[in-house]
Image 1 (cartoon, one colour):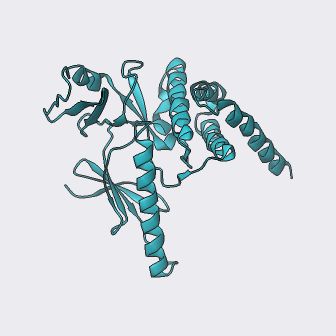
Image 2 (cartoon, one colour):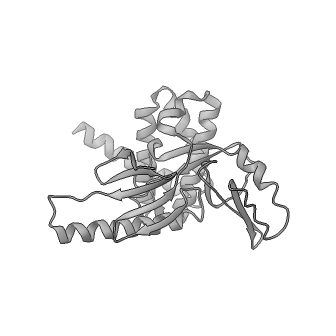
Length: 258
């Protein structure tokens, strides 16, 4: 199967090949070659580490290979709906449920001191999980592995770990509350992500999400962000971050005024 570019940004091309996704960092001709090589290598390594850490607490694309030499990350393809294009197609109740899930995911990575850096619905994928649950429920014994080319799952240390192939379009790190809802929200593209203990950085992450909702989903963005905050309430630093968010927004209004 030939390579197909499914998205291209300033920093990288997102390529679909053999039902896998390749994130390939683009060479910058304006940079000295040696410096460009070093920058792209370090950013590839950094994103790989971010994805590895994030996978322990939320659902992200399963990383198969971090290739620093070629500045590529090979990931499993998620056959879901990009939320930036599809969130408005759901009814209002469903939109709020999805945004609450987004808030929960954000809280989980923030509690690990991981900052996404580009927290918008363009970097989130909605996936129905009914098909996956049917398979996961069929796993009855400890260390049982289903190998029907649809789902591989195994129970390790009393935790259910699952990896589904691209046919189902679902991949996972640690999965909990499988029957809580009939959908999951996957976070993608940690290219601008970084590690930080600062409440300010977590507040800015939420501020970016709020701005994205207002710009892209303006019809009822206030209710949607309220749902995000509801989900975010599980964070141990919830109150501090939301209080700091008010300060971040007040600085923004000051800049607009002057």
